[in-house]
Amino acid sequence: TLVEPKIVCHETSTANGAYAIFGGAIVLEGGTIDTNNRQGHGVDASYGGHVYCNGTKIHTGGQNSGALATDFQGGYITVRNIEAVTEFPGSPGIYTAGKSIISAYHSTFVSKGCEAVMVAHSLGHTYLYDCDLTGTVGLNTHNSMSPEYSYIHMFGGSLSSTQGSILCAEDGKAVMNLDHVCFGSVADGNMAFAKAGGRLVANLSAMNITGNTHREKTSYLEVNLRGTRLSGAVNATRLSLDKASHWTVTDDSTV
View: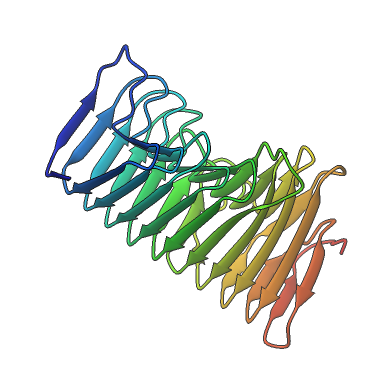
């Protein structure tokens, strides 16, 4: 347990700020983590490690350096009231790999060169409660190595993209369940996009959304609206609406 620590990783290392492994546990109360090195995640958990952060500020300034990340054989990370900023490509705010669980409450993530959240491989779960996230893409998935899906559950909060879509599947498989989430800026106009063989199922509840959907021929995209208003064009998408939902068609669409 560390109270108000100042953790700095050497720029020539590949060190993580806080790294829990083989069932070990780390508790951070407040403090800062600053990594400016390659593969320097702010917080990392592997092989069943546990990390808990409350009120910690995390900054990564190197490539392949997520603010929160799980790695080989999975781990568990829970954060509350943190502020996280990542600077470079390959460095998402949250990277959930494999059979891991990452939960964030009332926190802010800004990813300047990467997606806000990336889920990889399969059977990982990411839970976001009243969090505000900004990335080149909002939520993304890649590198699925099995027929199983990864999962993102987001309740409240906001999502914005600076280069791509809000929701994306990039050669991975993900189910994204969003409830009462506010969509901010959508850089490419697509609120949901599947490419490179990716498969995305988006379940959207109690939301007001402006944006299009689109997928490449080798990919799959499914959008299910529950009490949600959508304004946009729907392209090559499996779409369902319940009686409390409404779709305003803004351009030619293929459903």
